[in-house]
Structure formats: structure tokens, C-alpha cells
Image 1 (cartoon, helix red, strand yellow):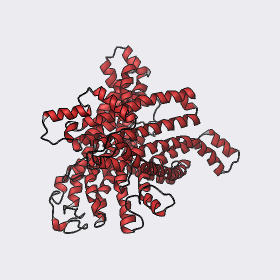
Image 2 (cartoon, chains in turn orange, brown; image 1 turned 135 degrees about the vertical axis):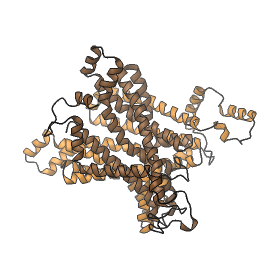
Image 3 (cartoon, chains in turn red, blue; image 1 turned 90 degrees about the horizontal axis):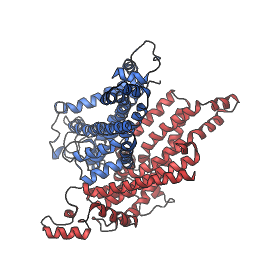
Image 4 (spheres, one colour; image 1 turned 45 degrees about the horizontal axis):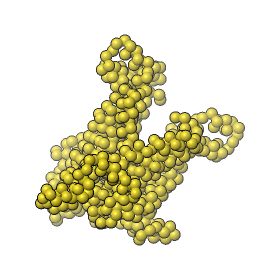
Length: 315
Length: 297
């Protein structure tokens, strides 16, 4: 086990480095010279050169990357062009809100989808199964930014039952009804795609387990159906939990559209504002942090899964 | 194509009532799958209406009218109402399909060529070349797809072309992986060795024996990505990173009409319905094709 963990950890290091290189390179994808955004268009060549020296842009690319990496590792992501505040501070303030949103969405999605998938998987091929499969296809096909707008139209504009956007003040207080109300629509919206994906995974896992011989044995021994199902679900659960974990990482990085629709003050909304104001330091920092979270969740899922199921370690 | 697929895919005779070829069976199954046929017809209708938009649209999609802003469906010949600048919704939806569908499909096509090509090369060569290609892919795989698309097009400054480049880069790694896995499996089969041992030139082995057998899985996977492509492309436009106004595009229209949800909620939801119908029908057709082409069932 120990050597497996070590191997996986070591394998994640080059990927994380690669991710950092891509994020570093993003600045150079931007049209024009990076310093030109900081200077008036009629700046003379000497000023440009001076500024380049100041920011170290005259040095070789590899040196620039290493010094950038050094600063990032010590938590210095530069300053936001739009607000002047340190990027690290901006990310720290918004990240918690996205963790809350993505975490809740995944939990909600799992509870709904596991039930649906179990119903479908037990009777593969039945009309119930077809209904659930239909729901799953809708879940993965619906553009969630549109679903968010539709939910706002129905529940906020027409019924006036739930708030349309925002978060009801800084910080989150789980005892406050007002705070919880603001979460309802974004969580439903964001959980739609994971519902589709997790329901599909559960369905195939359950139907596979139900066809195994030990289920026949349990039934032959006269176990009531609900206890047979409990045994079967125990076997179907690990792959589904793994998918749920991976979905958390995906939602952390993929909540940008939903957060924009609901003006949810998370990292996705930060990113979307940074795009509008062409705030490259914020763009770069947020994407780096979100991508690293994605890498770490994938790693964590992998390690947990291998500790539950030793067969994976041999692969 | 039909001759090469048969070689590995069907060692035993098909369990069909009459003896059909591989594509015969696929066609037979598709003809008896009403759900896939219905969604296929819907998809065809969407594509055709985008292609023939200039002839089908009742109004000029760019003509604004201050007095006709945000009118409900049916107002003075505007079958689906008007948008926030008084432009005809039906005409804009028809024209919008052109950009949205192009921006969603072209990247998948390009990524199939580039990613699929890289994957086949990596799988066929193995060793160092495989490691080099696949480790680079791992890095891009380490980004959630929405994030990578936003990152690249956001850094490049938006626009249709940049959006398509970003989406192409998003789709290359998964296609490359699928192609690499399929090629590695085929490469180690005996008939490839046999072909090479009998002196078949490398080009022929690659084209006939390898590509003929990995093209199926790659294309099926690529077809499932088109719906993701449409959703992501509209998403980029929704964020202001794709199509620029006043061009009609479903994602951009959805964003522009967000301010109108209090005045004209039905009109505001319409572009999303178009995206949703397209993506559902793409998913259903892709699932149907996959089931029809599955030799095991």
C-alpha cells in the first residue's frame, strides 16, 4: 500500500508542474505584449524596456517561469489589475463559497442519482429503467446555465419563492434560513449534470452486481429482497463513490457558468469577472488553483479507492 | 470499411435471424429503434434549418426596432416574438444555429483528426513516443473541460476563432486517449503481426489493419462529444468569450436576454431550448448508434 501511495504521489508531481506551465503560458496567449496593457498606447520604447526590466520580462522564459513558480509556491499570485488587491486574497475569499456550492451539489446529486440508478439497475430493460435512463440523458444534455435561468424565471420571477441571485451577506451561516434559501437554486442547477452521470454509473454498477452468482445464492438461501439489495449495493457503491469524488473536482472548476448566472460569489464568478475586465493575474491564479484542486481530488479519489479495493493497486 | 471491421469485431456469426453483414445489422437495428430515429429526424431538422436559415427566416435577423422590443410570440407576424432590440426571435434562432452548430462541431472534427491521429501514432509506435505524447495529454486532462476552454479562450481574448481553438484543445486529450487505447489493443493482435510478417508495407498495415479497426471506437466517442461541444461553445458565448454581438448565437442570445426575464420570460428561455433540443438529440443519436454498433449485444 505504502509504495502504491508513494508512486501515485510522485506521478502527480509532473502533472501539477505541467498544469503550472500551462497556467504560466496563458499570459503569452494574450494578444500583444503583456506590458502594453499597463502603459498608454503612445509609450516610447525606452519606457517599455524599463517596465519590462522591472517585471523581469526581459529575462529568458525558463527563468521567468521558475521565479513565477517560486512566488506562487510561497502564496504570491501577484495583484489584481482590476481591484489592486492581492490575487491570493481574492481567491481565498471566493474559494470557500465554491467549495460549499460544489460540495452540496455533489451530495444532493449523489442521493438522488444513487436512488434512481438503483431502481433502474435492478430491473435493467424495464420501463422504469428507460425512464431513469431518459432522466440521465436529460441531465447530461441540459445546458446548466440555461436551466439556472429557467429556475430563476419559475421560482424567483413568477412564484417569488426563492432569491434569484447572490448569497445574503458575507460568510455562510447554516442556521440562517435566508442563507439556505440562496443556495437552493444554484445547488439544483449545478447538480443536474452529476445526477445524469452518477445515475448512469449506478445503473450499470447495480445491474452488473445483480447478475453475479452471489446474488443468486443469497436469493436461493431465502434472503428477503431488501437484504439481497443491501449486499448488492455494498458491492456497487465503490465505483459510484469514485465517480462522485471526480464530479466534485469537475464542479469546482466547472461552476463558472452557474456562478455567473446566480452571481454566486465563488471562484467561478471571480473568473468570469476577470475575463470581462481582462484581469490576467486573477485569471491565471484562479485557473491554477482550480486545476490543482482537480488534480488533488482525482489523486484523493484514486488513493481512497485503492485502499478500499486492493485489486486497483496492482494495475 | 465493412470488410475490415468484420475481421476482429465478429469472430462468431451474428445472432440475427437472417445472415446480414456488419453494417446490415447496424442498419437493421437502427430501423427498429424508433427513439433514435425520432431524435435523428429532430437533429436533421435542426441542422437543415440552420443551413437554410437565410431562406427560412421570415425577417432580417439584424434589423432592430425600438417600438417592437421584447414582444410576446405572435406579435405582428413575429412567430416567436422579438428580442431586447426588437429583432425577430425566430429569424435569429434560425441564423444563430449556424454559428452555434459550427462552433460546437468543427472543434470535435479537428480534435478527432489531431487527437485521434496522435493517439493512433502513440499507440502504434509505443515506447518513448507513446510516453511523450500521452504525458503531455495527461497535463491537459488535468483541467476540467469547462475550465480549460474558459482559460484558453479567455487568455486569447475571446472571439469565434479563439473559441474554436480552445474547444479543439479541450477535445484533443480525451480523443487521443481513446485512440491510443484502441490502437494499443489492436497493435498487439496476431493479424497485425501476420500482416507485417508477410511483408505488408507499414503504410498499408496502419491504414488497413489498424485504422480500419480503431476508427469505429474513435468515431463513436467523437459523436458523443459533439453535444458537449455545442454546450461548451454556447457557454463560451454566454460568458462573452465566443460570438460577439450583433451576430446571432444561441449562447450569446441567452446571455443578452437575461435582463429580460422579468419582462418576457418565455422569449428569454428560447435560445436555451434550442441548445437543449440540439444536445439531447445529439446524445440520443450517439447512444443509439453506439448500441446499434455494439457487436456484443
